[in-house]
Length: 529
Image (cartoon, rainbow, N blue to C red):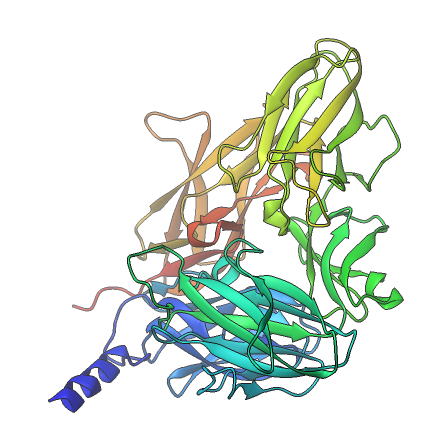
């Protein structure tokens, strides 16, 4: 009886269901990434049918369904970092799922490896392990050989990037089982540590987890969704690159901070994709990992910039001592609408920012702190007179150190952004479907704009409609199609005679605290009679 029940569960969980006729769903991918220049077979947990196809957010990554799995191919020149995959069929599309492209050699975790005395033995100086804590009580152990003075960096991607439902612990053990180094929450719930060997020998990297949402259990947590990527390296590993941003079209001048760095590590190259991408990916000549920097349309200044600074600009700061304060002199005009933004956590750093504006007598004129402890801060300020003002940034809890860095952005130009509530739309031929686009106007922007589409075929018509009760902060679009179609498209806001004010419509990816400009349209086949 038990064997029949087990077989029934296996059949129900099988990834491809030929009789399934609905939009596909993907809840996790295993492995959740691959090395550049390789092809991997990926198990997609969810509901897919035999007609399912795969779309990727960049041309350097491609996927197809093959014998019940997804075969994902990554080009040799693919940009390291997160790419997005979407499954689709004639009925609709899945949500976007992250797929991480790496540079070191990759290997799969192999069981049994729960016991530190019987770990999975690794050879080499840098590798990424695709693993899974697949059951309650699961522990994964990996053995590496280090020379005295070598620094091992261990960094795990699970909850923050992949949304695996786990709160992982990462340890380095001696060969006889003593804990030498341990980390719990470094990037959100994901751990990272660096350990310098005191002598030649074998060392054990051990991974286990608790549930990301605490419950009453007292055992180590595991499930089929607890996938992770563990990078272990004695090579160059970057923590951050100051000034945390790159100015579009301008040379980048800065320094990389991290472990085992060489002169090559500071020679960054950047991949920004499209001009409207919010972030750029930076790689050094010998860095094992990519960096995520803001992609700014205005000047970027490093630490201790020339003063005073004229908006718009971005500038980086770092707290070397506990309770320190970073100050920036800003040249402003009376009544000028300024927006001050400070971010750190979204860049993988540790500051919980507080921002203040002071006048020439150091009197406080404005102050803001994040609404939640993991958030960033935004402050609107209009100067009462022409002059130089001081923008001061502190950490809410007075933290200091290499990870206590932040990016200050001071914006001054009228602007706007456009959003939609969903990243996927399904319509039927001949039936108009409304798409409300929310317009958020800032710093006095009141110029007329239009919204157009990029990537739609000739058979899909987009037009602006005026509802019975128009909303000045909403542009209502209508999509009409004359035949079935599935594909990615973008919506773009434009201002006449000012190409610099083109803005891409973005949709929230709520699960990942991200947004996307890659929208999806499915025009379904006519209903069968």
